[in-house]
Image 1 (tube, chains in turn brown, cyan):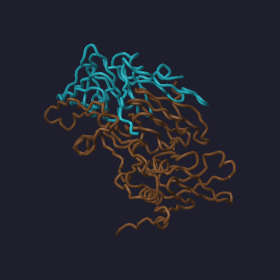
Image 2 (spheres, chains in turn purple, brown):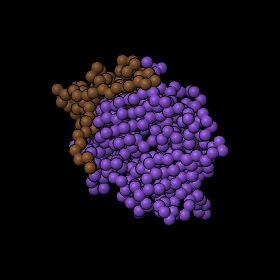
Image 3 (spheres, one colour):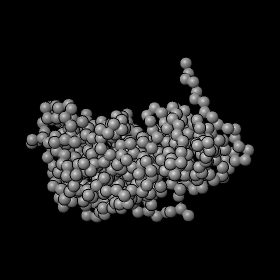
Image 4 (tube, helix red, strand yellow):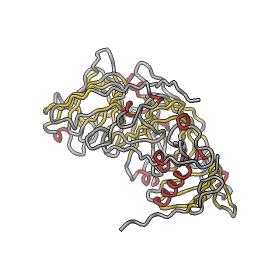
Length: 334
Length: 171
């Protein structure tokens, strides 16, 4: 028997703009030629928040592609989501003292399939032909502007690339090549593409394996979207290529490690609860650092860079942090 | 106007610039901030210095100079060459559990040469990553006698892991 389809709440197409509006619980979402509008009710007031449609769609793209990721995805200083593992919380003003202190914040918890289906529908409807929210602004231009014109479902439906052990092994994720439609990105044309010399003895061809990770990354067609490229039990190498601005301020529910493989990213660090600035972390090639479990962070990469996000995929981690069983940073080791 | 000219910057032992932390209302030590090339520049050959730690899992920086001892592990490990040229020898151990029993975490150093069947040889340069399969013995060689390499290891905290956080991080 087929599963019941998930019913989302969407308006008819607007005669004026061509876009649909969407509702999820107490939240309403609408867009026009330039802006996305998020509305909710709190303190007997109808409140609305306005974002650039470009910034909203870039953040939305990551929320969808990452399955709401872990921790908090702050679209900006007002609106965002919190991963509750099976459910997801949407919030407005909850982590902004100006709203919170006046009782004007709002949050609501949804089953993840409903929230995801709503966001996917919204993303497809609000993305115009020629606009790719995964690409850098230099690559994708300004097609996000204006009335509804076409769509780009091929771009917004891309799935995160995840290997089981290592790309290129038999039965595992493929390597990226010209032949399988993964050309070198314009910003990495100077990255050597030579592969390691692998000399396997007979019978060990499937175990003696190496590849050019930097070449693999140079062929990424997305920004700020980690793939999984090597796995040691729950230890996951999740490298990604970064250009322009991380579309969300990611609030951590665990320590997150960054290894800057090339170029430079500047990270603005804010308090997770209030958004107060705490630090700026400037990472250059070879630098290694954590994003502590009590902050939110947003990266700025002037030139497309290679970042290794190193994760512990242990599903117990968020609960362990919440119970105070794990430190929020490593300063206790010093 | 589209940007058309790019130069990708990688680090190396001979040419790296460590980043910075600008503090507004925080402490630098909270970020466990190090630079793997700086760490390797001060390490003994094949010392496995922990630069990242997440519960039992670690990232180790290794200075590849000359030929290493033989190692094995009960689990997969991965080696990513960040600088220099490095050769990797692999041997399928006859008795892997006798050296690294199941459940033993991290790399285990062998005493002498491994007993087993040769699996192969991999020649790697910057950016190349190799699988070090569970139960295999491996050793590294910096193939150029004048050059020193840097390897980033994805592994689990073990007997060979060296932690010296206050020496390598901003405090």
